[in-house]
Image (cartoon, rainbow, N blue to C red):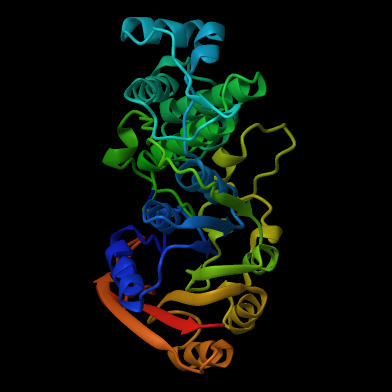
Length: 383
């Protein structure tokens, strides 16, 4: 997913820093999960991950990429849904699925080839096999609704996919892990055909080539683990207090004054699911009420105290803070706050240059400072 601050390309830098610091895998709190790229990487490396974020779409991705360890057999879904049954029969996937059971419970393992193939088939059915629906997104975020975030066809398919998913879940035809894996795939698919420059603060007035492609839903196989990771849709400091002693806190907060609730309201609405007619959208871009999801980390005045509060709340032995050279907390201030919290008063900093994320081009009144910024990764031992 196109996302401000996405760490996917910087994962080797993060892994290298953790290795150089000699921090062995344990329990980690990924305090600002976003698209869950870091939480997923840490889980793959053997960490037990507790991830948190205020946004619903982030919670969906955390559940799909960090928490989920197994997928459904889809046997119950195939029995109840003729469309899925037909897809399985057509692809030779209709043979009964054998569950792996032990000690009276299902053991979370890497999905078998059969279950992974069925997952792919169900995801593709959601994109193209369900009848398009004139629902909330068709009425509000396509040309028929006066906005050009999606073509009318893609908006109707997004409605069909998300409403079908919620109906399956309501009827008990999908386990939670599988539901979130598929909903995350719908979110990612919608983002790939969104008529935006990467954020949803505005839509583009002419159709981009990507927006004219048909919606595709591609579900990813989960990472199988025995230890259960946990997702939280809550304030980072509140989650930190509940976790107690852990090995590491990873902090990747907003760097600038742009509130994510306003920049990603469309994925937020897809993630929330069913809607009544009383959902109120405002303005040309269809913004939603977001006061509870506004972050103090986006304020030059409030961000330093927010960092102090998180460090006071956590029971972590180690803290890593991702930031960059254009953040609202300056380097000197950030070092000082970390040094005050550190057991020995020492702070290490790692740096990595990377290409700047651009949501638009230079224009009058808007000039980027350059094509590159420096990613800063700060480390302190807290206890």
